Image (cartoon, rainbow, N blue to C red):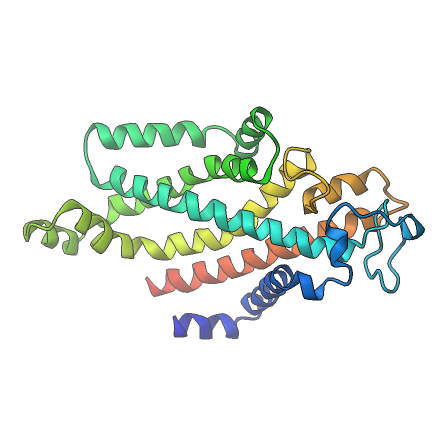
Length: 277
């Protein structure tokens, strides 16, 4: 881990990714202290300052009811990061366990798991999430469930492919010869060798989860007002382009910064862990 961190810090692009992600995380965690108007995350109305262009103290302008856009972006980051963490915490274990089982076991268990996975993978992710959100109430919890339902099959397919290759290696055959149990082989022998691609995909997926969640909110199927959300802020401001450009540009740039930062770190991890293996 020390070597990986050192290489990340020496790579200009990965260092830029670390800076962007650190800024996003710090802004979300310390929003209560950083935001100049923390009360603007809720149902606040200030018509004396409505639809103001960037100025001081509203460095990113205000929306149509006078709320500070910069403050709302910081709290929207909190929602986006929470969504990403919860989705990956749920989706990754499901995908990893099912991928290990399908890749190592033979017969109908492997066939059933992979056919179910193929069904989910055959549906475009955003369409699947939109279908679920169309049936459920548009809340944060339901949004997490919708995104999770479309994310675990990708980890199943990834771990399945790695497990199929690893189970032919000598260390697995030796463990089988010594009478090791199936759980021991799966979780103590094969899983550690699956971690590099899993960690890389998790880093890349964090940005994509934020992007998908913002897309759902843009369509009105995500977090509902007055809770700040990047996608809904972009959607609300798009109606007033190009005159009130700040309503859309700054939330859009906030999405770009988060996704770009996680992608840079994920690309760097892929290169490092690929070289290590």
